[in-house]
Image (tube, rainbow, N blue to C red; front, side):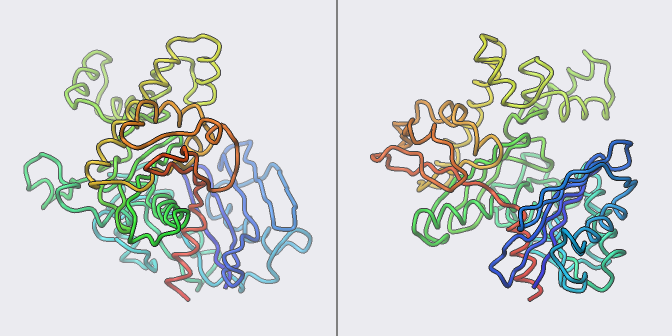
Length: 400
């Protein structure tokens, strides 16, 4: 069975085409970005080794999906003989609230749920829905499946997802912790169990998904017990441009100091804070900040230490919440590639059973691996995430 995975953003569409009969082998994939602008571009690769990059004329998501479909059946670079080979399309959808806790065939009821979550995921759910409707137009009759970022975290107990607010805000307005990056946390926690040579139901894992956005989850028995992001992706870790946890009263102070309204302060906390604001070099990219630190920039040094300290605190808290730990797994762009940040996060945690092997940690590899010392009671893993593979697998399991 051929499964196409679509991740539609506000100005981009990422795609991967999988052959599930071949064990989930990726046949082709790529990205169309800067949609609607003059310099829209497309990158396309396939399993034959073709790598194509080109400027394209695409004004909306439907045109982007049409271009993707044309490329998949292209006589020279395509991987399918006919679009009829595509039997299901899996979509990343960020927020499903409490209504969607598993992969689901998308119908009008599901689309209404996605719309209902526009207010709490305004940057993600609207383009996710546009991508779904674009696929409905280009692939009529093909099953569209929603795989929701929030779904993996639906197993959290009430004491983990409730806030210290009047209870009616939860019962009437569903204000609670939901969590995000769920497909990545699901995939990596399962891969961590495999690396340990155990079943997911038999291990306790903390997954550190560290990218421009970042979140941590506490997983026991294959199920999420807690996670750092909340009602929205703003809560939790310090991220590329998001502030993460802070005293709510700071919001009112910022509004007064900067003369901002509600929309203005929302933009300030989501897009101008985090590493971007702390480092002060005009970049939220950890690589740029590490480079500036290595050249002696003390503000960047402080930004890195503050970023790492927040992660360290969550690891300690989740070890307590889980009542023990078998493995800490680092994943996503920063987690997989920054040996410096892993070392900084784990510094001083030997007494808690997390002993890093510096030589293993510094060795670059694209393979899942342990980087802990041989006498470390708790394993430390670096596991490349594959959210598209996870979406394809969940889509296939639902429709096969």
